[in-house]
Image 1 (cartoon, rainbow, N blue to C red):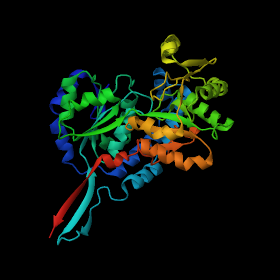
Image 2: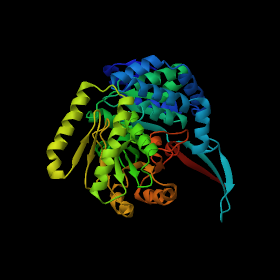
Image 3: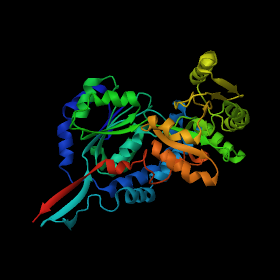
Length: 430
């Protein structure tokens, strides 16, 4: 699905557009800079008049449960209303986007006039996971006044293209700042043409996606990475309360472990496997109850994949020295090692021992891949454990039940995206 000049076009028309894309972008850059107020007002209209039924059905076709789809829509309404966007602009950029301000430079006899301006043209290479729709990346680029080119992921289903079309209908002036192309990631020729007109390439994806694009992006084009991250829970003896365990189970059940902030697994503050087995015996019924209470509509294909992976784990358990604890609708896989990896998902987390004295040495090798830790501990342990986690590369610590909750003005993986989509320019005068 391709969107250019505010309308959907076919692949043949896309070739014509690409041949003239640089000139079209130059024409747009020659216009008055896109104002933040225009974008915010358009976003506010979009979320106010959103066709909820259409997008829930579209997400359902992608395997996203209706209740989770509704939560995404409610979250979008909260985060992209006028009040929230104004707050976010204030938090991330202050009051200085596009507004010149002057100061006398230290130890020099000239005046500097400074502005924060858009980078220019952003190419968004989006990922198809349920962590956030590709359209959201474009909206962030628009807030900072950039021209945005979105390369859709293969499993996106057209949701982002329709959202952006609705945004253009709310404010037709945005048509010049939004391009959507449905090229395959294997279509190197067209991807390189898109890269050639970009000032920066925004990449959402795992290591393979980032490595592939690094080979295509020239050195003078900025690469902005938002890679797939891994999150987990950490449980101490003081934190092993019923409320905290129920909160952890709720996060696993509600997210299906699909988000970067979902608990892929659970580390226990111990070096004794008997403690791990004891925890699994206690936590399994709690998780089973949460999974059944928040039952997700999972396609037969996904169910089969989960069953096959669990069967493989059982067969390989003798070599991995692992043990599977099976519930009615979920499982826990106990491993003796301290490895971090993604889980089988959909209610099948791993459980591993990791005493607090080994946190730094065990987790530092994963420093560029860690995001959120759901911490179940005593109040007296919170401060010290949090600072150890921050040294490992973790960027957020929170209670287990809030791992996948976010808030207006929250950073992406420890950074403010709006800052990364802008540049600081100076004019020096006598």
